[in-house]
Image 1 (cartoon, one colour):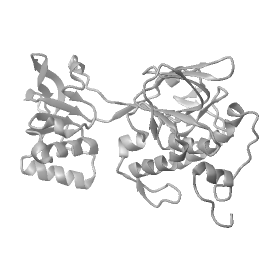
Image 2 (cartoon, rainbow, N blue to C red):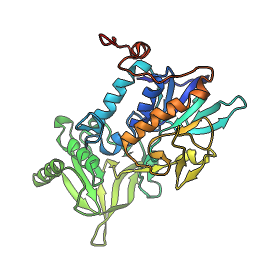
Image 3 (cartoon, rainbow, N blue to C red):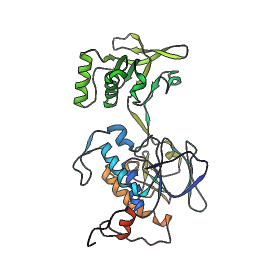
Image 4 (cartoon, rainbow, N blue to C red):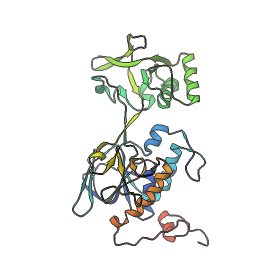
Length: 357
């Protein structure tokens, strides 16, 4: 997997894929077997999309030929599968501009200044780009990335500090456990906070939290963050509204908020594509949107009979790749080939042909 470096140059490419979730990664594969190189853009810092962000270690049972795998394992296998195609990845940025050009190509620009000129665009952004649910407390944003964090960051930086973790899911509970148990690097005090003493996490995680609470290595506070205290430009306390109706100031050095992610369609809504309930309308022949040369696969699209399943997205990616050939290499006739028997595909994939094929 190749990740981009910042550049001011205009990059010309056959295909841009928006989204590095499982369907976006498989789109790389389907384009790759047709010898079409792709650039992949995702707002998250790593590949995986909704799978890794929301249920990385939960089992998936409906991937063909794979009785069970975790979401993280699925992404790792897809990354291994597309390795021969050397796709260029651009993480941590959104596509902000898509402009059709007179020659039929599209000018693509991202929030970090990346500029591409693409013959085709494949939107595989799932239900949209995922943004952390932020605290709605005036002024607290000033502490982001110094004392306030919306991701489970390296626990070593919190050694000896008083840390509050807000959330009720696996991510929040596992983060609190790591902070409280990481040996000499553990936090001085860890406070887990949620509106009520109920959680949505795996049974083994709940058991560990209960054990840590029993031995006083992890505190729990029921309530909702409503304010903060500060001294000399640093946050020193978190004001918590309790179920009893009182406000309590809890001394803290750092705050980690893991209350989930909110999907947003984002700039895609402004690209002039036909929408139905914030989903892109496509045909079922090649999964093209209302604009020729722009395709949509996976949860972001809609059509009669649509099912939001990963395996359906894989099917859509295959047909979209073949449907895009007219835009990418209009002079080239493309015939269906099988990876089992095609010498060309064996060469593209970098594998030895099977004897007798």
